[in-house]
Image (cartoon, rainbow, N blue to C red; front, side, top):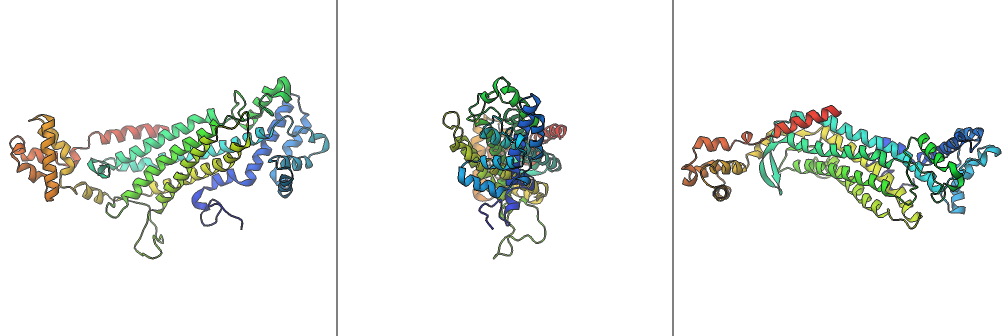
Length: 452
């Protein structure tokens, strides 16, 4: 078996891409897209009287990769060192002689391959769009269920303040929804065809050149570019750039699940079903393997975006140095973005939330977590800066002595002289210091429900 990429390896191909993306970027589908472009070109030219209608009909009927001898195509490639010539030669073999002249009439190779690429990208764009929308929609119940679930917020790796798990999920979904906005907004700008002739002048088609491009793109369901884009690679770079942002968000969420599932924290865990094994030697292990896949694939997608940005500077009107590298990086990014979104969907829709552990961690510091709230209570009797100094000193003392902050505060006359014990007790209740967490969740939920 000649397999060199994980996306094709039997053990890993289900983890590194999805069936939908595999179908779009399958080797035969890639070549089929080229044939579809050739057929659309002939039909467009027939519509304006440039090509005989019978020829366009025959070209469309034979636009089937199953009719092409790919072994002969590969042999032609060895002889000609040209990407498209072998396909065209075998395509013409399937046409009656009068129709052969009209295949690929006036087009250049990059017109066909770029338009074929965009045909695939348009289909792949829809897959990613549906996955993003589905992920957001299917995670709304998680956010709603945990609107008021108390947990500790962490900053710089340490306990910061109380908030809710619903608010954390809201942050995830808000960011992913912006990615959906970005992804939808690039559709008209980026998903365009190309049919401009050898060097972008439409010269082979005379005054009908712009009509040839417009009609061909319309028949393919692609936008019409304002100028030729053989050397303008920003559209593909932008697509990969937005996928990098999607991957970055997914990685952030997956990393939070990963960290929160650590034994010492134990607040979240990936879905589990009987039979899952975490280690070949440690029987007790249950690892966050799906989150790890999200994080691993995201790194590749983000790296590919860097490569695609590097490919934006071909020499002069075009060259192959950039173009051929796109053929590797673009499908890989789409396939892996689709895979990581599928993994993330699996994690979040089956996420195990340990609310008891969240509450236990919330009280781990014995009240010190609420130092800010106590500081504001104390600031009613002294300047805020002075209150900060007092509570800072007493919080560190409580931590060092491993004692409840309440007791340490009430033993200090600077506090007990101006604040009653019930007042401090109330200030140290986490549920009394989550601010507008619930309102933020409610507002986002209402907004996202309108869109789903």
